[in-house]
Image (tube, rainbow, N blue to C red; front, side, top):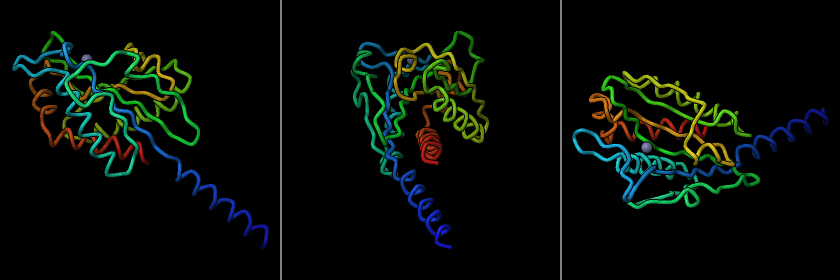
Length: 199
Ligand SMILES: [Zn+2]
């Protein structure tokens, strides 16, 4: 009886410590300043849409008391060194999320893409969150989500902490552009991301 009680207490302590692990979310809005990234035929800049998604994600993270680091909060450019030199910290579950918008010459390509570096030391953690997000995004009406484990973006490729790059849609596709400009969709995707990070 005593032994069972001890095991039970130990389990309780363990679950409490797992729950208490702090989450630190680093949010990178790609491009900025002189680097606008892609441009929609209707004039929208990729850098602006990235910042809108970054802000929406920050708002949802703050509601859940997650520590947030914003790489940029204005229309300015950050160097590679200013974007990701984050190191793993004991007792902290860190995640780096970079937003880009997709664009192609063909107007037909559409849907979200989630990228990570499948060769990174902690690729498993990045893959796990990418797969969760893929199924969450795919529950959104009319949205296909691809995963690409060969991310070439340096902030992700060389990241020392789990890192994913999210492209919520194609600026070159009329349907996608309408969606990714929509504040409601931005917030809905941000909520899904936070839910998948916390759970
Ligand atoms: Zn980009």
